[in-house]
Length: 254
Image (spheres, rainbow, N blue to C red):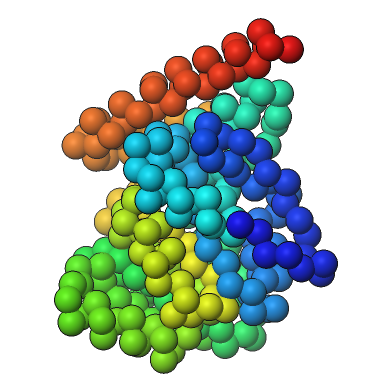
């Protein structure tokens, strides 16, 4: 769902199975523009695994449909678009998040950030790593292992502090559902689901080498680091097969 504002660029949309992505040349600047205008934004970083999950999870599907910005995060999404004649740059969520933090850290802005997710040790190291690079950053950090009264207290803290950008890394689909349910706590903030980014920022894990990322093979490195994910990775060939079927149907109909 896009907020109508004549002062903001209007991203085009492109259908991805039952979902869509928004097409922009510069996602970071679009979000910074909304940040400075106080336009609340829910960002979803869509990949093939999430797309297939949304086929079976109605709540997740609805959360993605309701988001203000859906970016093409995964290689499968880019391949899907290319099969339909559209070439577009992949926008990894971790890189978008990092570019926002860097831009704020390099400026004289006092906009506060929020890191929510990971273990207590991970979230603390991730926040410290960024504050070491940019000492002027104000980062509100909370681990993702909270329930009951602790979660109620955390929501109250968000409502009081009103951080400008909130990075939520509590896994798919939980993070998308949590943002949809709670974004009204900070209605003028940018909310972004960042998955396992905190682990990488904390130094627990590393990203794939650049040559793998450039060749749309980052998923293989993630599977190497987390072999327990192999069942979830089965969604990748399913998504690819769906892409081929949809592409062939479009060719036949044309």
